Length: 405
Length: 179
Image 1 (spheres, rainbow over the protein chains, first blue to last red):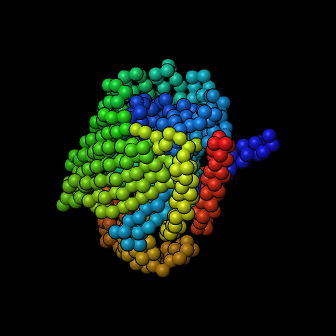
Image 2: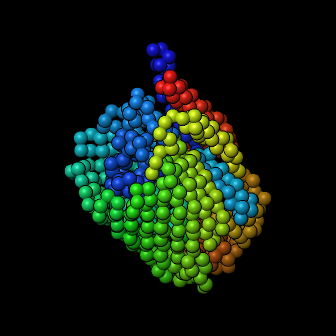
Image 3: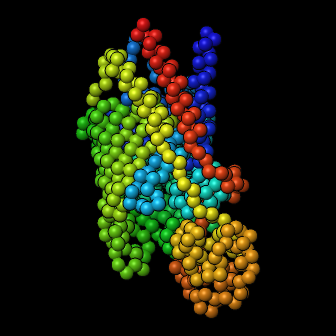
């Protein structure tokens, strides 16, 4: 009995200690739109966010144990059922409280970048998520740590603390107060993921970078109304700007919206639209820039172990020709828990009027291809590696170890 | 789709051992990162001239962010060899108030003190002369001043220890079942 209690305590304390110990540095998040191949069309069954990502529900945690990860042999008769608790089942929070978290590290190999051939980020992401449900009200958010180089485009926009250099900063990607009008409608105010396109974990994919809709740090403050129905899900967000950066001239304001029709448990198609204006663009420093992205998405699972994700968006911005961005990704689950992904992408952001000649990605298409291996090798543990080749960067190999609570 | 093995065969047990060992080795195979450049000069310049914002590194450097080898803009002609904020402030004290490196008739200092400030290297006030960079965060204090370079190894060792403990527990449970 004593030994059992000691062992249980150890299983709680050690993962907690590990997480807190490495919580010291950060960039990223996860949602698996390809869960469609298991018949999951809606995101809110497994995630607190109605459009998917980050904070897991107890059902989501059990589902990840049953059908996401690799199993090594059939379960024995006396095996306990998967636990919905966090820390590998060590703690089950009370029902109104959701708790989760995510840690990723990253290595990057780029032989074509002299001086930066090999890089290691010990903590690419270290976030804790939570949500408290009080009747029809919800309060939720994330808190993490980030340590990026000066001038980095990653993590900065989610900073809470004001270090502008390579010091450690506290970050909050999401936080909100919400009200459920019914089981279908949820209104939230706060800093939220932008509803746009296919919600994929690859935050450096061009469809997410060019539309500025990744979940790494592209969230904005605003008001969002989400609808999740049997045959349709949708979210419309009015964007008031990112108040975690300043001065005000750099804040983008407008809207972002996504509507997806669900034909059946293996086919869904959607429309996205986003329009924002900033006095000065925070990344390009262009003045009085109106940026627009409008596009289509497709999620399909023609076979039980194969899914297709695709998105194409038209891009418009002030003082530049129209552009476009798109991606298509085939995901083949060879063995439960082991995914082979092949991704193609294309990007042309349009030639700026001030530019004299076209260049790759600006007036000329930039092409990219990814070959990825995604291995959910143990309960709430994932190893992923991606070989990426692009017109502008011939060889990049990245790898990441990820665990989530 | 199929599962790897219908029974707890020696192969399945060996595979699980392999997985746990791999996780440990994958963690240990990573190498430490290199450090980056000092970022404090834009903030020091902002405070010195009470600017409306922190300026881009490119008022002094030909790259953004700047590095020690790139302070090659005309405005930085007399600001080279600076190692810390005090060096920079002393050099700014010595600058001629009438110095105008882009020859647009507006002294460099006045360009940086204007609201919005403009680039002393670029004539005019168009978008190409924009020097403000966004400031990130909610204005709270830093949670740590310039920490020393952090080694990932203690963290990885702890993660590995956790994996080993969990693996041992699984192994024990598996053995108990098979008995």
